[in-house]
Length: 512
Image (cartoon, rainbow, N blue to C red; front, side):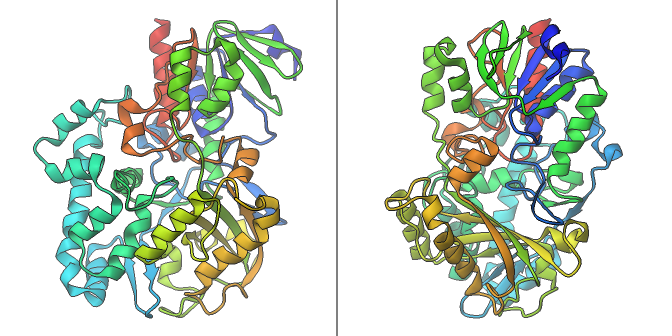
């Protein structure tokens, strides 16, 4: 580390170079602040980065798709001019079923209607009604202007309900319904119901039958990337490019980013201490680390009531990620072929309602069910540059797995988990696992070690209604000059970057 880092008195030191920490740095530096970002790992980006698990193969270990990245951040940091490009996944969500039927919930309404009508004619109107309540909530609380409730201070439930007016369905979606209640309210066909359940538990340590899980579906469908409400897509070069472009904006504004520099302690009002004992002076410290790590760094300096609040937020992950190299794309028996429309969107392999319950219960007991829900993404069909010619990447997001096993551990059970996950996909395919060249398995402890997320929780803590909006941790803490900017703050988890912007605005307001 250059001596000038220690010799400078910084306006702000940011602990952690995840995408939110980098966003915070960019805004503060643009405001004329002297900003230093310290990252313990050798690579920036945190969970939104790029690695090379196999020669010539570029993949993000955790974040796969863009959808919630805030348009305001894209505009204000000039990300498009820096090279940000993305391909909308207009093919939507494909779901095969064990009886040989399938549905592709395409983003084009006419195509989607035809798909649903072919599977279950009675559900076309219900699908529209379910989609409409999501749209109404999005338009009410996340309009495409400065009144978007993701911008700035987190709103209270009362403020949100003022926006929703007398829309009882909107309140049910945002605060009350389980995902099972939601699908059963609007859809009749059991296949369509179970095929959609996974959208209410993404990254969430809860069953789709648990209160509030429908809000997870809303959260992940509330984006407006590219002016396309609810759309997700593939970033050219991989999701990690988002972090790299934001880092470019921060550096261009004058921020200094140092990697391979672990912070050992935060001293409120004074700065930080490095593992080697060196002190970095700064009136403000902003932690992009998760709140449990931040607590550890604060030690006895942490406010007692704040410590209690942090420790009350569940932060144990339940997802396993597989990064998979393929010699060909999966060949789904319901719609044969290895380069079909459904490969260009997202794919869910569903569970029956009993299997959903059994899977969640098993993970709670430290076991793994033989059938798991998976969501699949194929970066390589949109962006062949990430793999050698003739090969493909498959990113697998899968639930539920335990953080700790009742018997054994992740090192001894890893191959078994890989078999179960690939088997959960393979029961719908003719060529899985045969098409698999290699697979990297990342359970919650692996995510914790690789990315630094306590418990392996990808959102720095639960995103159910009890932990969202004004119930989320504030970017301001009771400790003087100490702030948070990660996914633990409003507006929650995923690659949003508004968390980092909101923290920067709070720091600048407090400095006036």
